[in-house]
Length: 146
Image (cartoon, rainbow, N blue to C red; front, side, top):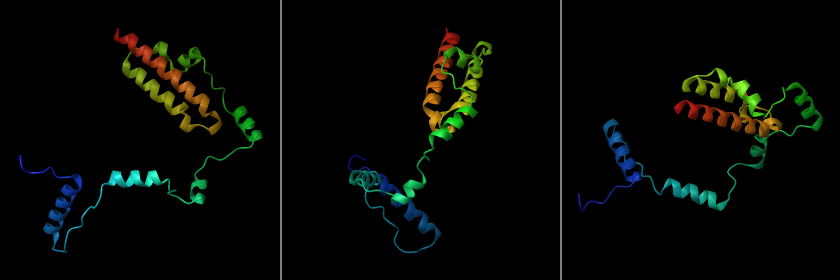
């Protein structure tokens, strides 16, 4: 194969599509993939052309809550402590003796405390808590490995 040129991904797809169509029924020429998909994506991104109308983008923005509503939410939500000792107690690290137990504790904590699962005004503190929890679990795993 020293003289044969390597086929592009598009050429391979063209061959595959034409082979499948020939097996099904003769419907004319096979479609051809023109251009490189990644080149097209980069071209669109470089043009900074909006992909959606402003009204469509607006529908997916985070709602802005009034300060009094945020205050009311804070009174309903438990205080999210960033003290490593409190987080270690929430994780139950002292009673976990295997890596599998630590992994389960990490998943449970993430399920209950991940920033994406909380109200927008709590996300910064939740991200800090997740970082502390991950650090505590990683330290406990490293201690087990020694």
